[in-house]
Amino acid sequence: MIFDLFSKMTQKSAEKAIDRSIDEYSKVLEKDVNLMVRMIYNRKTYTTDVESINSREVVFRCPINEYDHVRFKNGNNIKIDFVSYTGLYTTRVTIIEKIVKEDITYYKGKITQPIEKKQRRDNYRLPISLDVIYTLLPKEITEYEGSTLDISVGGMLMETYENIYQTKNIKVKVDIEDKIYEIKSYIVKKRENFSNGKYFYHIKFEDLNNKQKNEISRFIFDNRKMQSKNLKIKS
Image 1 (cartoon, one colour):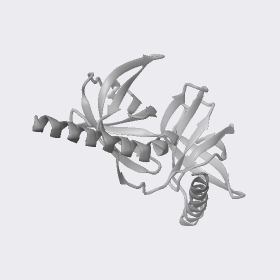
Image 2: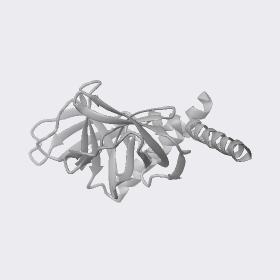
Image 3: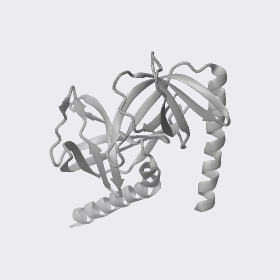
């Protein structure tokens, strides 16, 4: 009897801890359009996109293992890391549903452990929309238009209508505080935004000198401080 009561109290305390962590971190994670989830399953590490996060439920794309889908079963409990522009957050989820939508497989998991913030990213990604002009290397025949969803000293997340398949090497031109930066870059990853027909490109900058890095870093720092101030005013 006493053991059962203690067990119920422990479970209730654990549930409250989960709720507190979700209240603390969910808004930050939900706003990150580039949110990824990293997991270790069967001794292998996988990284995939988060489709949605709502209260205790997380929906993520099925990870790919050498072009084959990784298959989870309902009830599997796995440790995951949310990889966000604000840092790394760890928790555990129990798989509760497999979802197939437009030939894409997703899994829904329920958070079963408090979310803990582990670290900050070395290169903070500033959520900001900047106009981008880019060309495909090496020929640079046509200029295309896009926009940033975030930017860091090391790269950017770019959104555009173009499906770039010819090359992974591009040159981007971006206007930062009335100064045009032309940067040779490499496409690390591509994914399609099915809601509007655009494509997301995770881009790594390849030839920034120290002066340019410092200028972009200062721009990010100033705008980050301004965004934090605005958030405090709203709250």
